[in-house]
Image 1 (cartoon, rainbow, N blue to C red):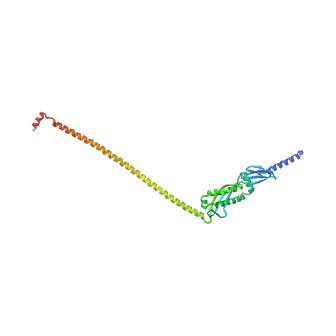
Image 2 (tube, rainbow, N blue to C red; image 1 turned 135 degrees about the vertical axis):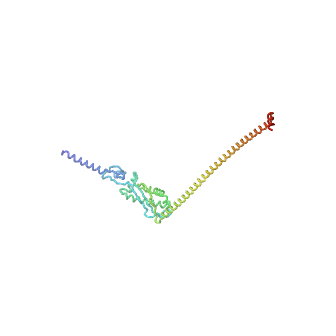
Image 3 (cartoon, rainbow, N blue to C red; image 1 turned 30 degrees about the vertical axis):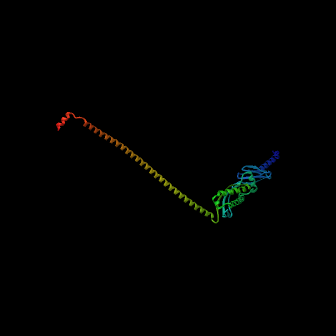
Length: 289
């Protein structure tokens, strides 16, 4: 057994060194972090959510966070609008390092091994500068009444700047506009008054339309009633005329029948008078006399 020790000991040492070498070179990247291996390679190797290997002593591993970075961007001092009204802007922004290789390489040159707070501070300054730039091109009423346009203009303006830093704009929302002279509050009061005025006008118009509709309905109902009564009267009149015509026809027929009866009686009496009397009848007349 002792005779194998010269062979076993070096083998164990070599195996231990190999294991130590592998252990020292094995790296694994979480999904929210990019590990950048550089040194022997011409182009750094990027690991995101997977394992890799670096050559100990000859290569190094640097970290770049891919986590979402929430920022509360507030203008430090008042910014004049296009109509020369000084305002403050409070906005909520979310950014992150873009996960594509090109953006990571660019971001690595600017933010390698920096914390999220360090990255957020640099990006926040860029965002605030772009916000100020856009505010100066818009009037206060446009900013207050059309925040979507303001957000779109800021986004269009700042995205190229962030891209040159390897940063992606995830979301940008304006929280509020404010000013020291309460101009925005006065605009709100004016808008409320205008809304109340419009509401009163709308209500008056609605009441007017209701009254018109009621009057129209009443007129249509009255017209329908008059039409119905007229039609009934016409029908009754036609019925009376028909009755009168029937009665007249019946009277004419009755008169004709009466006249015919009288004519027959007269004719019968005249025939009796014109007939000669018999002797018996004449004797009876004498005896009676």
